[in-house]
Image (spheres, one colour):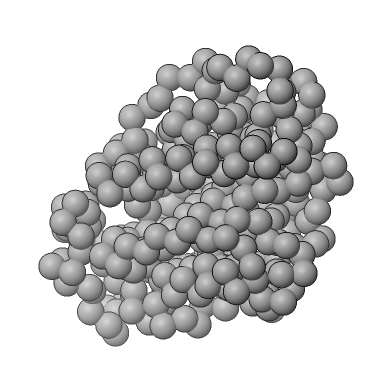
Length: 336
């Protein structure tokens, strides 16, 4: 039997109107979190939830799976090409890294999000099926994402991509991987330039010490205990939580300013153990000189975008994220 949480769940009247039915249904079903299931069950539940609640499937000109070589084998990439852009000029490309605590999730769970981003932005999206913990703990998922970045560079001419106009994007753990690629000098891939980072409620600090961890302990699919479970599986050595490749929010503004952190689009949600660190990270990027568009939704919870098919606010903000991608790349083109 699970122990009752010390803190009560956030009252339903404090949940946004367009999300309250989903939260109520989760609580009525027993409020079983990822950490309360076996690993296989958690993975299956996440796949099912994303399929049931995601945005409608967007039809694109081409969607194809590609093999990317990594140490010890290969990983799958999924390439989304929306069509058009037949000018022959190399195009900007989005490298998308899915969420799921580095433990669950896949290109399938985020297929609908990637299709939507490609369709609305008009940009190619490459989604990375990086290997998951605990079978492949840190730093393997990050190394797989670096290999995918290298793949985009190597195959740029073949697919019409501009390797010097790459936007990294991701939600939750994927947002963590994206921001590490964008800010860590050790993750630099020769011949590539990251021009933007799209971060949807990212994990910015895995020390698990923020006030929002104390606030969100029960009543939502992602709670403080969920994050601690993910951390225990991702980090073979708990001391790695202080590594800047794990907790990029521990960087200093001067470091980001020196490196030149790219423009960022950041979304945080208040009913989320990651809320405070995400807000602090958006501020850190701004203090480091990066242009930042930050949206904070105090009454929504983690998973807003994988549930954007049933939460209108999620769909609206996903549309804004896609538009930001297009605006960013248009500005880059005009700047030469």
